[in-house]
Length: 424
Image (cartoon, rainbow, N blue to C red):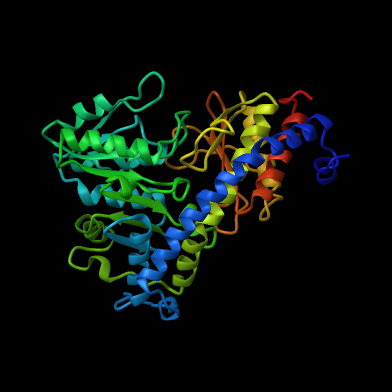
């Protein structure tokens, strides 16, 4: 009996053998992740040291949050770590979508055109752009998508044509795949899109949705010319301990506009009490490179394991990665439900809860979500979700430890076998 059979006594021998084979295949890749984590940890550590972070910056502020030197220092550390001029890091951001919406409303004005560089954005952001009360198009913003090429890559010529329009004001680049099967954009690819766009229209503002991508590579979008970069603190950069919040980094003038949009013109970045969360936000950022590395190792194992079992996976275990999301194509609603329910059973929190598909606000199809996390909705902690539509893909992401990801993947395979989706 191998270790996998010991850990899950009802595990079929073929699944245990697949897990052992997957572990052997990914171990050489984990050394490359070690190098990545070391580079990113050095960059984050330098940001802390250059900013002069001290214990006094962990103090709580309340009310308006005036004269919160810790909040100001946190803005500076994020800007330095991401290679940007300025930062806006606030617990008042409710989600990654909220940060991106804030950035878009800060940049765009009635009559301006927003262009999505990589086809349709993910479901919740589409509601920000059009269709929901208060959306951008309701305020007179025009919207255009540059369709992906047949091979699901970005059409650079199409981007150049789109940004040459006289009303083109903002180019939106979504780094992660969302609920699609295209590959996430690497930082180098983001840089290439930015170069093409700026050559065609030097005045266009480039905003990058960086969710799920932070610290997956050795550079971030501001390093390759992004004007604004937005993300969530309950994803990668919160290190699994940030309780809530989001960040925007980029050009100082645009970050100030984003602060005015989040709070109020004339007040901008001078407010926003930290309510005692500052230490967690600082410490979460410091831990983020390591925690992201753990999630990456878990994703590599999951890809190798499920490919060995005969499922289509994206990316493959040995392909370059630019986000934490591992797509596993289950092929049926029963398979997607079994997978997500197994991940919930493997969670440290709410393992007894059975997730079911539901009409989640902002999504066009019922969505099933498994997330037994210490922080509600935290995507750097292990979660699995997917829309109930063909080809019934589970989007498996995060993991504070690689061991947790591996155990959850093993349980998912076991549940698929029990449901008859996986033949053993």
